[in-house]
Image (cartoon, rainbow, N blue to C red; front, side, top):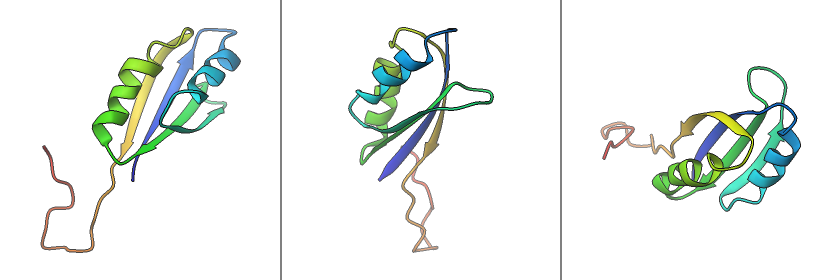
Amino acid sequence: MNKIYVLINCKTGTVEEVRDAIAKIEGVSEVSSVTGRCDIIARLEGPNLNKLLVTVAREIHKVKGVEKTETLVAPDLDISDESQPVLKVI
């Protein structure tokens, strides 16, 4: 299962609305308001990494109040066979 963590900065006064809108997006498994350099962290999970990335671009970026995002990808890596590459780039 692939995971993507999206760090989200919001326009002032929109954090709750943005958080609630993102929570309704398919593929989002968790969303939290946080303190620090971003306002919200969302976790997306699914078997298809490309679909998760498309969700960020087509859904999260379009939520009213989202100013900026940073996407952190945690690919599903199989490291049980060390003779094979850890990550296959396509």
